[in-house]
Length: 273
Image (cartoon, rainbow, N blue to C red; front, side, top):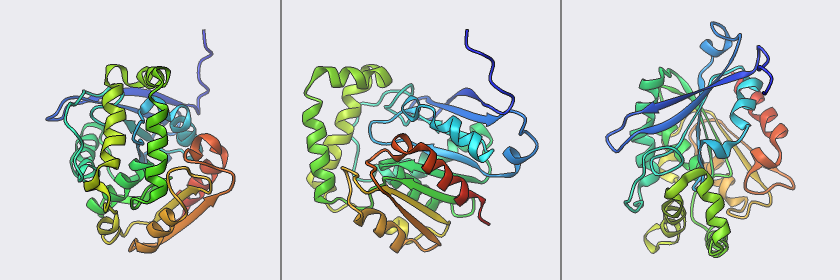
């Protein structure tokens, strides 16, 4: 039997949220002993996962983030992913902006989230920017980790290499541990969407032109899916204050590769007025 959590440890709670397309699974962490103080006063942090991601693939990062910041943290599985309802359609060119417009209001209403901070990884970072742009009155800040702001050759090369690696059945089986029978759809939703000719000129420029909330941009110097041109574009085109951090000796998943550094940077960013 595992020991009881310390009083200050965030205690997870699972949620099911109805949408017109099916139920969404979400999990929230709120530091015990903080109710009525920091966790109530400070905006909650909403996490948006990457193209193959799920709540479980954040691993212990949400709990560590809740502990480090004293804030409520909420992560969810996008429709078609993890423990959320399946979907059979192909993602369209506008799926990033569509996610931002349609899903956060449902999550916020169901989980009673007022003002919030949104943090996204990879394509989830693009969604975080779109969310911040769509809800400027309620979004206190935006943070991205390894986000793509446009499609560059390095992005497509990395996706092609990953697609080839998933020809190994064992790789798809590992993905199925988090997505079950939806694993093939999840993989195709990533590779076939980004490699499609109609997606080649996609950018976040329009959303960045509407984003006024403070923006933190984190990117690994060895990110296999995006050069430094990705975070530079994010920081340059946003309309609000921006801070960009390139992390040395780090690839596409900084919160797993350098968790303590990422937590420190995020905590410092969120303490600013």
